[in-house]
Length: 246
Image (cartoon, rainbow, N blue to C red; front, side, top):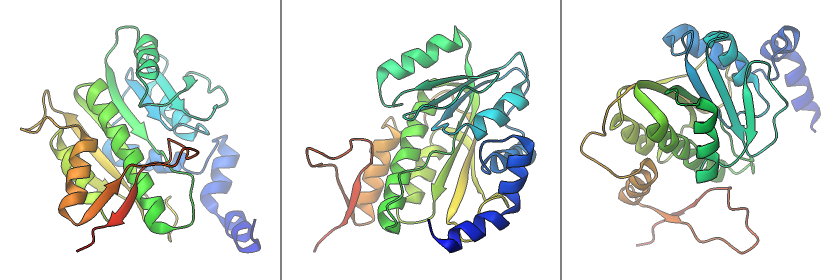
């Protein structure tokens, strides 16, 4: 841990405030600012938090939906229990995980999907941005599958090659799609949040999954998706982008 990193975090007012208010991460304030601007979470809503670890967004969701709401958090890492929510360990691409989520809903529709999911950072921007893009697109596919009509979806994306692909995929599924950068985001961060409102009853003229749409978009802008992995690779780290050779 570098001295510079320690000093910056020590001076971080959002981190200090989060700690004093009992939030598990400073990122809780990003969702609070999204909620203040867009009002996506309502009393009584059913909410799925994808990539919930360590639980900051789950805590905020519980506050917003109240005692009659349902909040489910899922992550490949174990998240300490959050009062008023159900947390589970699972991979959102696994049908068993989706079945467990539906079981917790107990017949209720899912109103909102939120995701502050992040990759294990490598320090190589292109790689980290590509992995983050795939994770966010996987979350979009889950939201598309589980949300009730007029439902909402929020996910973090990093600016860079391919971001327009997920934006366009979202526009096929929601009547309102925009980007928002909370002031609680770090100044040097390239992150922004995709705000998707009013889930359509069916996609606009394109039945491909969001992931298939993204891969096609990457090909169209000269980036080849290489899905081959070495035997010992972690299957959850995402795809690698390779510049197309003439």
